[in-house]
Structure formats: structure tokens, C-alpha cells
Length: 248
Image 1: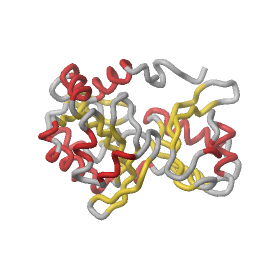
Image 2: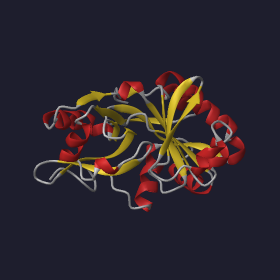
Image 3: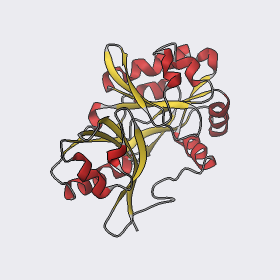
Image 4: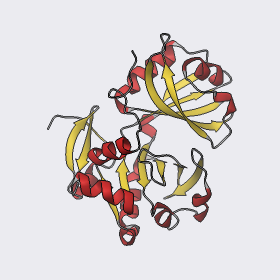
């Protein structure tokens, strides 16, 4: 197996019997018990995904909106605090540099971008090259990400976080606490199922992962690798950068 960066959950994957592969410079689990089983379990119960390889870029300051509206496809100024939208990072020829989700931390001044792992360096360079005097920083080292997806997700989540999570609208997010650390819980995902994506500080990511597995056992929770993540997104017709969209 080729060398790659390890997410904060690498040892958790080894412990669970994950088959590790190199993906976009990261060592990631491609499967655990098997792709088909993991796919079906996510549709029927709960799938747990490590998506810590994704990149996070922060764009802040009074010129954050003008910078982002210059290079992305959707109207940033319409986002309210706690709201997010799917968007495209575009080049001058109309090609797609990346697809991403923009999270509004504070209207008009503070946005968190979640970008594809393989494109993070390219995205950051593109943003800096088209910067209109905003503060642009790579925050990928500050966050791990865990996706909890499936029809029973909120039964599990309300045992660890606030029961009101169930009321969070699609493409909205809230702040919660875990192990005294701030986490962001977003009603987003890449499977088409009900669920969330959790931005969690790396130092408590392993603890949260194990807590989700332990408390989710009675709901049929199981870890899912990249293989089933891909078939789940194909089934929902969600694009994958490099396969379905590119910068041409």
C-alpha cells in the first residue's frame, strides 16, 4: 500500500477491519464488511463515514462576499447565519474548478468552504489568485469530518446531541458541544439519506466515532468505506469531480 496522510480516525479503521487504500493522498477505508452490505445498511439503518480527507477553507472579512461571488456560481449574499448551499468554483472559461458546499458562519463576513480532497491545493490557489482582499485560510488541519447517514440517524444523534437536531432544515447547520469542544453539525450528505455531516476537532474525532458506534449498535450502525460511498452517490445521481465534472 502506498504511503498517504492518515486521518484522525485511521486507527479506528484498522481496529474495525477496514481495508485501507490510498485516495487523493490519504489512507482511507475502501470497505469493511463489503460494499453491498454497507450500501444496503446505509439505506436501511445507519452508515458511518470518515470524510476527514475533505478540505476546509475559510474566507473572512468585509470583502468575503465579493470574492466568493466572483468565483462561485451561487449568490453568497443570500445566505443567512447557519445556512449553507451547494455551489461550483468556476474558472474564467466557465469550467468547474471544483464543486463545494459553502457554510455561512456570519453573513457578509465569514464563510467555511468544504472542498474535495484532491482539489484542495488547486482550490486554494484559485481563490488566492482571484482574491478581492478577503482573508483566505486553509483550515483543514482544524477539522475532522464524520458523516452519519441513514433513516435511523436521528435516533442515534439525539442520544449524543440535542434532540432538536431533528428539526434542522436541509442545508442548514448548528453548533453543538462534544467532549467540551465545539462541533458543527450540518444537515448535508452525499448519500441521499436523512443524516448529517459533523465537523469535529481532530483531537476528539476518535472519541466521537467510537461513541457513535457504541450508542448506535441497537440502531444497526456500521462503518462505510469509499466504495459504498460512491455507489450511494451514483444511485442518487450526485456528481463526482473528475468523473462527471471537470475544469474544461
